[in-house]
Length: 268
Image (cartoon, rainbow, N blue to C red; front, side, top):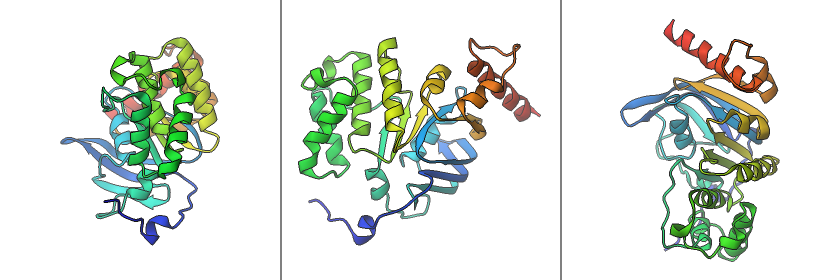
């Protein structure tokens, strides 16, 4: 049985920031991985950088409402989600999420999988086929739409993951390591897609590839030990580094300098 939407769920919600977090604390298992994070981001493409163990994936899972905050405040698309008993359906309908490792049914075709996710997002039945076709085309898989997922290469499977994340034309799009398995040509096409999506969507991309952030993001967020230690533009990131910092580009040297500084301050 499909439950009808309540008046509250149908009521439009306005927001300036798709994500607003203050003092956010989130556990990964028993470990407190996000340790008092403050973050406000709106429309645009935001790159999330940080070393392994910095809390990036835990933060993404909290923003996708997979994990519940331990404390602090969190608003997504203008709706508080940390309150006990919060109705998350409206947030989830407006969110797209690609985790590092996403679950799928190997015997589904690309089209069936993307349409299934559209159904989970409660999209109108008549709109699903067209939305799925458009999402599949945007990631360059139109000629593979009727191939089973188990037959795809790693890069193609990743692109199918992006397609399911954008099928509902989300207001908030969360992509955790989306370019894993993509070849250089596919990465260039993906950067172009990100820039297109960021025109009217809040996109948060977690990655280790600084060059992808510089090429496609309007804003950069650097996290360390579960906190935001810096936020600014790619150009400002490039200005943070010096000749003595490791990296093959100004942005990579800037990122290295920020991580080094955060480690010194954490050890102080």
